[in-house]
Image 1 (cartoon, rainbow, N blue to C red):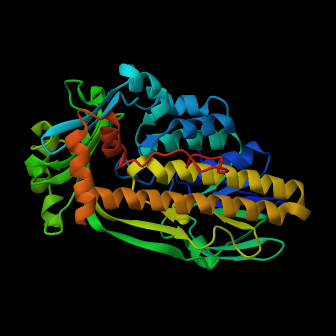
Image 2 (image 1 turned 60 degrees about the vertical axis):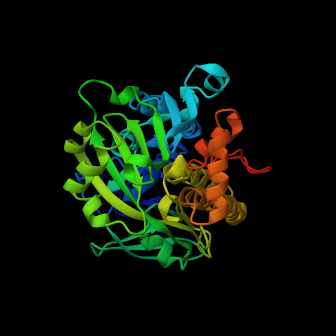
Image 3 (image 1 turned 180 degrees about the horizontal axis):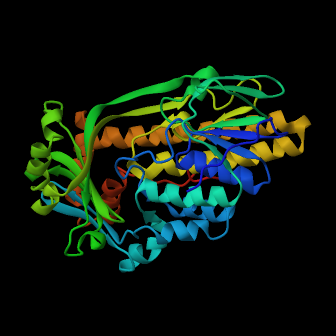
Length: 415
């Protein structure tokens, strides 16, 4: 993949995207497709290693957004991934929810194309990068942002290399430790969750069974001392998550010996010897105090704007909506400078409302999964007891980690 360099002098209506992750690449492509000159700044080298599968779930609305930016892009991304064939939920020693694509009423309503696709984030990034290059996006690798300052007329960016760039608009997609967010004076509102999760990527089993498996969430897994566990296949492997107890030795459980020990109790022991990535997290649940600067020339997207637990795929999927809507707002501002400020304000207000909603849904999922209070545990236990006779009870338990819900009236997006 060839490296591109921007023109030496600032270009009228030149836009800069900070961050070459999937959200930044989406923003850059959306701007370029609207005819705006774009430069992407990335602190890391072009051949950087991207450990782990990271954001693996792309739902249908996101795939359709990719197609809306560039026809065929979404279909190509989806074809590189794995269709989820079903979803099972267990509670203790009993199955409380069972769903297979195409089977039964629910199976016909919830088809695999509605669930989207599951693939490593780095594969999604390859598709987006190639589309960016094909549409004239310029890239500056190993060019960290040192400082950003906006005015009523432009944004000045000082790079770690000592160079200075000028832009009409900037989209900050530089992740959880966003320099862009700090420089516009925005703060993150929220707090980390109290529970630690261990996330493990394993290779695809040679017998071909991994892609055929369903997504599974198991409450109070008996073999794991009552811990919650999830596993979800993706193209080329499978992710296994375990929710730790307050007394757990997280360092040991995430060591090679610890991973082999507990994975052997929930999946084929073969997986414990074929681990490709391990990490542990306490998930942040927070949203930026503002998605834009005082001059309405800097816009935040993705993890620069919000941090959620991965349940329900809200991080990357909502980031794609942030990015594409930001490109639309900038294009409107460029076309009509008199009303440009209002276009950015409307975008920031709309996307921040979605950020708060997604944070609250994700936090609710974690509270129910953790069941630290007696009333929540009683609700879960009763739902599990009646689930074999009452489908909605099992569906409630199945949906708890995902918190999939219809958007509120007047909110047009899904993330």
